[in-house]
Image: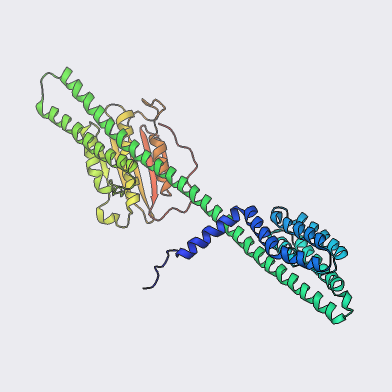
Length: 422
């Protein structure tokens, strides 16, 4: 059976964990390497020194050079120069190579692999080649054979060069890995910022929905309740039909608002719940909105194109248009004053849907406490769709709200022009 694609194998997991552990515990790893070289090559170096009656000196150089390996990655450049000085001292005091001199290759590799500056890495190569030449001359000089001198120097130079090249290749890989890690961090920050922005946008959208639902519904309920209370107190006789109609409007409005509020609260409460996030309101719901407003005592005239003329209008545009009409009629109920009437006009343009709601009431500022968010919410909704919103008093009296909603996706920034507060 072929392995499952996308699942890491056991050896890959173990390798990654081992690599991560060694990177986090470099001092321990280097200490183990130093002890291993000291145990395996130290005895050989001591034996070599004993043959030439320099056992103590050979043991000292073996101990010092292997001890430097413990801190080779923590202080690579000082270790490099210290090792070079020890190499010169060994050339002067010992007539032969020591098996523990392999520690010098470890130091050259460390500088080439872990020092960022290229000149320092190149210096390690030069020092290694210089040591190879001097070692070939010193340790084969007793044979007086130029072939032996050249062969020894060449062999050591090749070893130094190969180790240095491998270290540079590892350095290049580490550099690429660092760049990839930095790119991943940047991408992670971008994702987090996009998530924050998306969350803020969703909160703003839900806040607009809640405001539109609650403000309009409560305005209708308040108007109907006040009318019923006034009728019950001042009417000469009890009119059952009027009472039934008033209470029915209050009940229907409250139930509709409660249903939409539950839907939005459900989205906030459980993000994994299978909640329908599609807009519930659209142009098909305008009739019910207009009827509720009329039942609240405000005569509303509507000029709405036929459904076939609205073909191609997106659901988001329909929702924005519905909310503009809803909030505008809510403002008429709250601020236009008694006896005011409203006109709702929708016009399908070649590239936009124009929505206009006007009234012949008291105009801007009537009964306004300055704390409403209706126009601000309308503007946010319209500009999010790439449209524009104008609101203000009419020259002949009353108030008008005009929104232009493009049918295509928005390509421009929101309109920064201020609105006239009502």
